[in-house]
Amino acid sequence: MRDISIIKLFQYTLSFLFIIGVIIAFFILGIGYEELLNNIDQSRLQSNPQSEVLTLLQPFYSSSVICLTAFAGIAFLLIWKHNALEVERNAIIKKYNSDYLQGTDRGMLWLAAAMLCWEVSNTLHLYRLTFDLDNHLISKSVYTFIFEVISTLNSAFFILGVSTFNFDKIPDWYNHRLIRIFREKSKYKNIAFVSLIVIAATFLLPFVSPKLVDLPDYIMSFFTSILLFLYFKGIFEDRKITSLVWLVYVTLILTMFAQSLEPIEFFWEGEELKISPYFIYIKYFIKLTYIFFLTILFSALAYSYRGFLEKRAREKQNAELISTSQELVKSQETVRKNMEKLVKAGEEKERLRREMNHTIRGNIDFLKEKLEMLEEDTAENSRETPQNELFLIKEVKSKLKIVGHIHNRLHEDSQYNYPNLKAFLQDFENDIQELYDIKDTNYSYQINISDDFKVRTKHARNIASIIVELSLNTYKVYLRQRYKTDDRWLNISITEDVENDFLNIVIEDQGPGFAKNTPWNFGLTTLHEIIEKDLGGIIKRDFRYQKGTRWLIYVPISKIKS
Image (cartoon, rainbow, N blue to C red; front, side, top):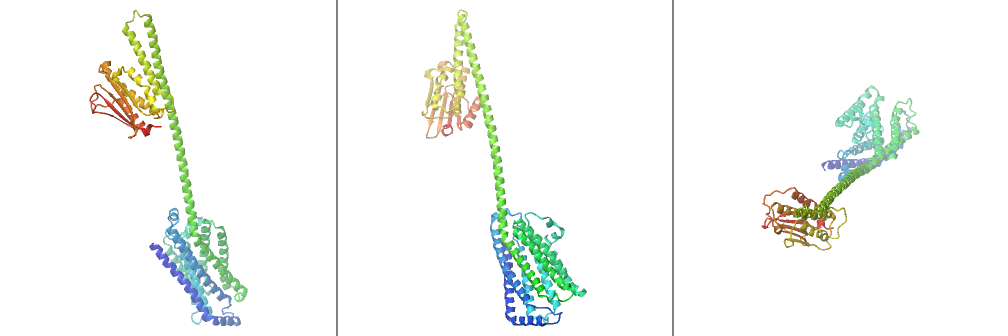
C-alpha cells in the first residue's frame, strides 16, 4: 500500500503540473496577445534574413501541443491509475500474472513526465515568441541550451518508461547488450550518465561549431524513437492489437521525418527554406501529428493494460482448467482400467472357486459311488462280512450325502438374491443335526427372522458358513473328548434385532469350553476375517457362560440387507 500511496502522490503532482502549464499558456496569450500580433507583423516586414521568421502557425502549434499534452497526460494518468488499482485489488489477475507483474507499474509515470517535458518546452517557446522574440531578456544560445536540456530529459523519461515494460513473448532485440544497459538494476545511473553527457556536449560543441549544437540531442532523440518503436510494437503485438501496430509504424515514419527537418533547415545553403511558408507549415504539421499519434499510443497503452492482464489470466486459468480436466480424464481412465482388472480378477477368482467346488463335489460323488459299490459287494458276501462293518459303510455313506448337500447349498453358482434369509438357513437345520449325531432333545435350531429379510447370495453363504464351521468345531471337540451321542448338546439361534440394527447369532454347546488365553486356530481366524471384513460384524466368546462354549456374533443388518 505504501507503493500505491507514493505512486498516487506522483500522479497528483504530474496532473497538477499539466494543469499549471495550460494556465500559464493561456495567461501568456491573454496578456501578450497584441504583442504577439505585433511580432508577427514585424517579422513579415523584416528584411534581415538573419532574423527569425515568425508566423501565426508557430504560436498555434505551441498552444496546440500544450493543450494536447495536458489533456492526454491527465487522461493517460487517470486511466493508468484506475487500471493499476483494479489490478492491485484483483487477486485472480495477480495470481495468474505473477510472472509478468513486478510490483506496481511505474513506467506510465515516466511516460507522463516525458509528455510534461513537451508541455514545458512549448510553454517556454510560446513565452519567447510573445515577449522575447528579439532575445533581449535571455540570449538565443541560452534558450537553445534550455530547449536541448528539456529535450534530453524528454528522451530520458521515455527510456525510463519503456524500460519497465514486460513482454509475454520476449523479442530477439530485448536481450541486446545496448538495450540491457537501460533496463537492468543500474538503469537509473546509466540513463542519468548518458543524459549528462548529452547536456555537456550540447554546452561544449557550439564552441567548436555553432552547427553542432543540436547534434547530441538529435542522436539521443533518434535512439529514443527507435527504442519507442521497438517497445510499442512488441507490446501491441503481445496484446494482439493489429491496428495499433500499424499506427506505431506510421508514427515512427512521421517522427523520423520531423526530426530530420531541423537539421535539413540548419544545414541548408541559403535562407529561402527558412522563410518558405510551405516548409514552415509542413514542419509544424508533421511535428503536431506525430505528437498526437504518440499521445494516442500512450493512452491505448494505459487503457489496454488491465484488459491484457485479464485476458492473460483467463487464458492461464482456462489452460489450468483444461490441464486439470485432462488429468481427471487420465485418472478416470486409470480407475476404469483398474476396475477392469478387478473385474477380471473377480471373474478369475469366481472361475477358480467354481472349479474347486466342482472338484470337491466330484470327489464326494466319487466316494459315494465307491461306498455304494462296497455296499453291494458286502451285500453279496453278507455271510462273511460282520454286521458292524456293514453298518459303518452305511453310516459313512449317509454322512457323505449330508456333507454333499451342505456343500452344494453353500457354494451353488446362483448369483441372484434369495427370497429370504430365513428360508436359506432353514435348509441346514436337519443336515447339521444328522451330520453331528445330536438327539432331538439336545438340539435347538431357532430362526427368528422376518420372511421378507432378503440378502445377497454371498452374505447368505457367509452366514451359513459361520454356523456350519462353529458347529463343526463343537463336533470335533465332542469326538476328541469321547462324548457319547446322549451327551452331545448344540443350540443355534439367529435373531433379527431391528431396534439395534443387528442380526444376532448365538451358537452354544456343553463341551469342555475354552480357557481365556486360548489362541484362535486357522479356521476361527478365517471366520473372524469374514465376519469383520465381509459382513462388518463382531464375533466374541461369552466367558460368563460356564456350561461350555458360547459364541456371540453381531452382524449389522444395514450392511447385508438388500
